[in-house]
Amino acid sequence: MKIAIVGYGTGGQAAALALSRDGHAVEVFEQAEQLRPIGAGFLLQPTGLAVLWELGLLDQALAQGRRIHRLHGENAAGRCVMDMRYEGLDARLFGLGMQRSSLFEILRDAWEGHADVHTGTRIVAIEDEGRRLRDAAGATHGPFDLVVVADGAASKLRAAVGEPRLDRPYPWGALWCLLPEGQWPWPGELRQRYRQARQMAGFLPVGGRPGDPTPMLSFFWSLPAAELGQWDVEGLPAWQARVSALWPQCAPWVQGITEAGQLARAVYRDAIPAAWSRGRVALLGDAAHAMSPQLGQGVNMALMDALALRDALRAHDDLGLALADYGRGRRAHVAVYQFWSRWLTPLFQSRLDAVAGLRDLTFLPLGTMPGGRGQMLRVLTGTQRGWFGRLALPPAFLTRLQG
Ligand SMILES: Cc1cc2nc3c(=O)[nH]c(=O)nc-3n(C[C@H](O)[C@H](O)[C@H](O)COP(=O)(O)OP(=O)(O)OC[C@H]3O[C@@H](n4cnc5c(N)ncnc54)[C@H](O)[C@@H]3O)c2cc1C
Image (cartoon, rainbow, N blue to C red; front, top):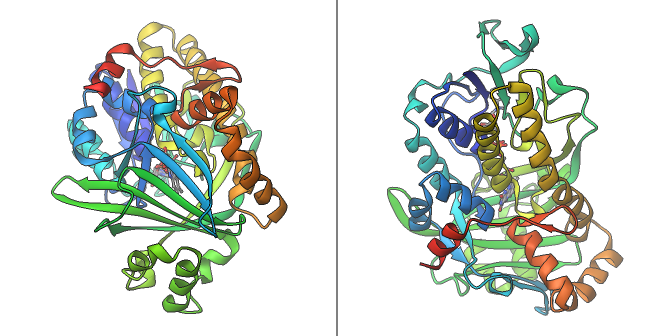
């Protein structure tokens, strides 16, 4: 088929690679003038790693990223309030902290067609019943057999499959950046510290990137979205003092930030589309399921979407049946994550002190209870499917992880 992909983020990258390997003629449209990743780092879960394994890219990712075995959260007094270890679910499992540029380059270099991406091309409309795209300069592109909308959380094209059931910004966002790992004391852990839900700092080891093996940390500082535009009016030293007061041990790393411009701002959205597809148009990645990054699943979900779309197109000659199959399968996995991230985010980013107090009382005991521990670890690893189901990871992939 002739397939257009709108957006060259993780979802668009994975879809371009997987679909062109299956012999489809893929054309990608990206609004940025240059192909590049945005943001600091992220945590790949076993589900995302399984996709990279299937694409033959796992070894490259493992060579760059940092294996993460534990998620540890503590309150402002340093008392542990959350402690989740992958081995509690399966001794072979771990997460992989990665720099955004690292995964970006691995996926880009695996796809020969990346040199032909239409950069600087913002798509503003899908026309002719999904056959053609119109860009901001007024040019039309196509005809296509299928249009994959992978234009991210703030998707303007989401409505092409019908009026979204939900599409709203979260009231909180974050500042984030990469910092040299140096003598960081917890290289195999995602570490977070909270003051109620008003303040949260997080450090994730993300390893090196192709061409620069210097190991880095992805640093995250939570803020109300309304304050993101003026977080530095008090000056960088005053802000650094505030972060260091929450987490004195991290002061040397935070002091390493020399100018406000090093910190990127992130906002997130909560979106449920009308459907995953309509006619010749299919949504993929955050365009299909924008959610807060609290559960760290968005990149993993985008990778899984790409493979699911490929598999649905392999399984059905009829496009309508293929897209229905794709949407059904992915919705069954994604819906519970959207639910949990919607309800859990205020526990970590809000002014609800009582709710944060409840979090600090319950999370640790819940994580040690037999039923609760498995449930929490399945949500963490991305392997929860629906309320009670499990997503099976391929045995050969698990053997590879063990190796
Ligand atoms: C602070 C933060 C931390 C996160 N941490 C994690 C984590 O640890 N683990 C995890 O799995 N996920 C994490 N996420 C979520 C993750 O970043 C996203 O879910 C993921 O990047 C979505 O990929 P995507 O390809 O769908 O969208 P994007 O990466 O947003 O890509 C969309 C692309 O489309 C382009 N585009 C947009 N509109 C148009 C248009 N009209 N025409 C052409 N091009 C267009 C954009 O320029 C962009 O390149 C985090 C997110 C944030 C903000």
